[in-house]
Image: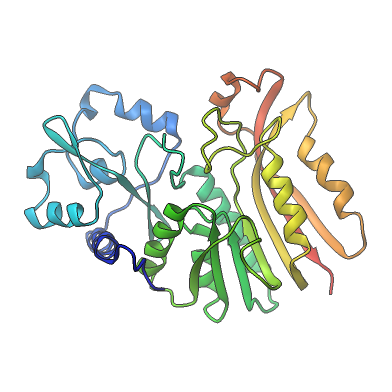
Length: 317
């Protein structure tokens, strides 16, 4: 996996920082924004004391907490910001199994923020469960809206002979995905700019996606799903992806659904698309209640809950 040639020194420095954290045994489980906020609001959390505080909880830290070499490395990587008389990292590092992923700092207020969070862990489990039960060849796979590259990296690591492409419309996501791929040591995973599948040709044995599914007033790309209840992008992915599956190929879509009066509007919308005999499909709730704080936001007045769901669609061969 080649790093960004436009800013190679910054990317190399960020990759080297990730390798240092790996060597130090760094681990951090990424939580929801509300949980992160509540932890950081505690009086004891005013300043960082550990690497997890700096790169996980994203707290301000004094220069004495890191070596001069580490601070210099952060400057070269362009991830060091002044915060009063302290410093703060522009990125976070989170662990998934034995992998490390660099993603956007907290809070993720930028329109081009790169996502990693609890959905990433559920998405990873969804992919792993499929791969454990799949014995047919995966030669070509894509991860739509890759964010930090979780889907592409997990597939590339589990199927070393497969050619896997991480796709995103956000250049920052592609940059951080490329660094995460390099950190994972994978030569069979590449990144490419694409709006869903419009920027890539061919058919695929496996397509995975974990798209945004919220209504977001700021229309941040990593969060805003569009439509009346955030489902538009997920519906678009289903529509475009099933037509690009090879014979025996599978789409794995992890998304969230705003449930209204006991009704699943996403399931109702996709059911008609998948009635033809060429499709075998399965739909399941993976978590019945996620991001409950979102129900306080405009547009969610009639929503009972948001459920994390998994859709599996296979083109019969």
